[in-house]
Image (cartoon, rainbow, N blue to C red; front, top):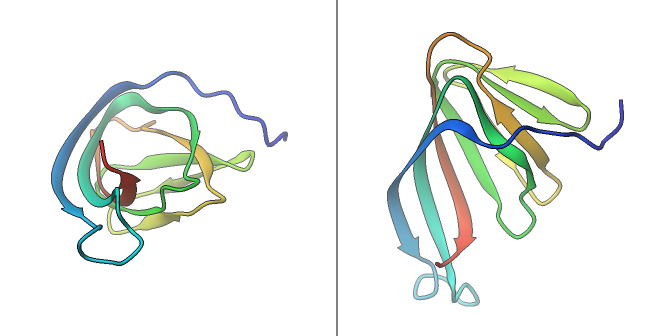
Length: 114
């Protein structure tokens, strides 16, 4: 398979910001960045797309319930509760819920402040 993937646009996704920390006062050289924690819910048939990367936006994901399919590098991996994955500068992917119940994840990343 090609590394070029086509992902549908985002649908059936709700994102709730749970907490943020301004990293500028916390860590030298991090001015303008924040640590962010979100609860992401992907409904059955939902897609968190389009394909996107994590260059300059590293993070980690932990699955609370349901199953999320992570599409990257021409393949896909299913992750269920209690499992997660890193999202580093080499990550280019999109997510999907192929299941019949909502999938919920905690996503923690470092982003530019809005």
